[in-house]
Length: 304
Image (cartoon, rainbow, N blue to C red):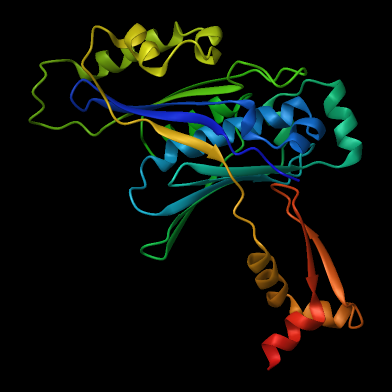
């Protein structure tokens, strides 16, 4: 299966009022998913996958060196797994796991975020390859939307005032000319004593919230309205510094070598359960690419 790895979206970083706050606009198209995903995943799964991609891209802006971020929710009542993996270079991949029974239920109902993932665990893992470091955060499943869940986490657990506005529209008649998900993500920065703006910081932060609340779904999802145009519409009475835009691209990094390494790690289990098995077929959960591994050749190469 050939996947078209065209430009899937973009991220625009910005700063407000000489460092009062920093933010990002992330917008992605339906080319963020493979044809198989668009055809088999229910709209509500695509919605939350696309929102995890937007969130991951926003958070990756804090990582300057090579690294990646994985956001996953496991053990949900209706969706057992959704995961998005985003890399510092702007590439990403995602997948979901849903039972056949729940697939039918999800097509017939419109459940809230909390109803979908009740009893699940939301984990965000960041990896800094250069320093061989890994950090993990566990986010409580809280609120009716992913947006409210994240704002609760940043304020309660991180003590970082955060504004998140996310809009998704998954059209059953995909593909569409519009964005399928758009996120505006803003965080207040620590106040500097020598800040050169004679402003009430809290009052300014509340002003940002009021302006952002006026942002309409059709503005956020319209591909004819640029990211800078949205910032101008919201903050034209403020000082806005815009940084270089980063292109986002759906791309899976699976390979024959990676699959073989995973199998080698499971060699003892495979030889114990199926000692006569000569080959193994493996499908990548992210891009659905199929691999065939010659087990005899693989294990013999290691032993020699």
